[in-house]
Structure formats: structure tokens, C-alpha cells
Length: 190
Image (cartoon, rainbow, N blue to C red; front, side):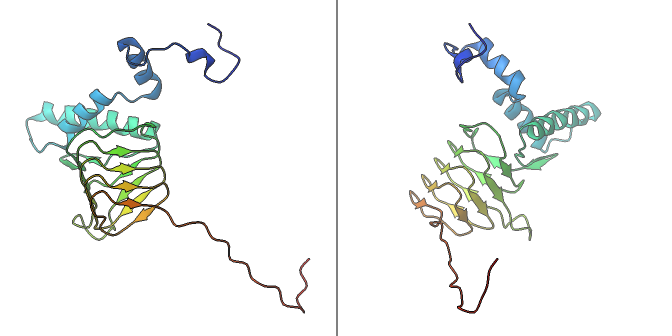
């Protein structure tokens, strides 16, 4: 196997379902989904426990924040509370640039692409998005404020959503427009 030449040539024939390849990819990307979500569940749980339990929570939080920072992301994880995920979401392009408020509620089988922001409006935890099951949120989309995204909805790339979206609806970003200002006869532009 050569490690030069065409793009992707060195990864030809890799079995991404292989246990050892998954471990290696987790080391390279510093994100192992099963460990990440297991640690996250423990950190946001409200059980107080003893001193050892608190130490473990802070150690897990450190590891989660380190993974988030490496991937320029934040899954809204804090001690004792955090964003509620009914199931582990799918990240087709990894965690890169995904920001989730600690107050969001996200359903099962949600696909979140890179550079997505799911945020509250800054006026209180009740003003955060609720995203139902089987929703697709494409790259660059922003879902902010008190809004509810219905089951099976699709939020298109770079769309900004701050309103309720009915189930199975498709939201797209507006078409780019160019405003042309007419030049007056007596104006001189250099």
C-alpha cells in the first residue's frame, strides 16, 4: 500500500466496520461514540453519590469537553444537566462545528451534519428548540429560540429556523440575491 498518489488511495480497502479500524479512527478523531454517549449520560445524571462519584463525573466531563474542543463542537453537556437526546444522534460528517444548547430536547434517529447550531435565545431555558424524531438538519443550519421541529422534517443547508416546523416539512434557505445600486450620472468612481 502506498501513502502517496491520488486522494484517498491510502484508505482503499479499509473495512470501516472492523473493530480495530473503529478503535484507530476513534484515536485519530478523538471521538468514540459509544464511550462519549455513555460518559455523557453519567455526567448529566442527577445522582449525587459520594466523593468518588463526583470525581468520576468531573473526569468524564473533562474527557467530553476535550473531545468537543478537538472537534470544535459542544453537545450541551454540564454537570447534572444537559441537552436531552432520546437516542444517539447520527453525525454523518462527525462532530465538526456542531453546537447544541444544554436546554435543547432532541428525539431519536436525528441526523445532524457539520456546522449546525441548535441554540436557545438567551432568555431562559424554556426558550430552547424541541426537535422530534427522524429529523435531518443539513450543514450550516441554525435552529434557534423557542421552536418545535416536527417529526420527519428536513432543515436544509444554511437555513435559519426560529419558528415551528410541521411534521415532514422541508425548510430551505432563501435564494441568494444581489442588490444592484444604479450609478448616478454625476458620480465618479475610481
